Every structure is written in structure tokens, then in C-alpha cells.
Image (cartoon, rainbow, N blue to C red; front, top):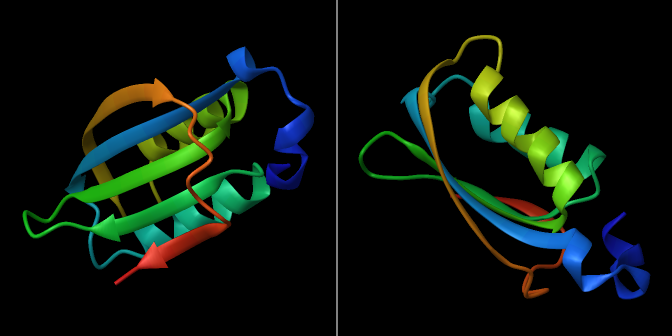
Length: 102
């Protein structure tokens, strides 16, 4: 859980920046991502980008981030995910909760 981060080894924590391309806007994709991230105990945000892609920043346990990445590749029921570009970064603890940005 995100609230339990203080006791975790630094090596097990990470930050994931992902850009999801395909039919991912107007299909409840952000709500899908936020729901999965909260269930996985991650913090960060998801937002639409002007080029019709979706950006995700998430922090937490690397194993949980990898699960989120699988959900991103799968997409919400009405979405069509063509590609997910990822950038793994060191954990910074810069987020509180997981938000949908508008």
C-alpha cells in the first residue's frame, strides 16, 4: 500500500512514466487506469494528452507497477491499445494518492 512506503527497501520502489497510444481517449481509459492503480496501492496520475494519447505517472512497489503496466497494455474494455512507451525512473515519493487529471 502507498501508506506503507516508509518501511520498504528503496530498491523495491520505482517510478513509471508511460504513454499509451491507440484508441484510449473517450473510452473510460483514465478511470480504468486510476481504479487499477488504487487497487495496486500506487500513487501518481493519469491524463489525456493533446495528441490523443494518455500519460501515466505512477510510483510504488516495482512489482505492482509491472502489474499496472500489464493493465495499460490490455486497456479498458472499449479501448484499443496500439503501443505503450515506458520510462522507468527512481522512486521520488512525489505523489499523494492517484488522480485523474483534466
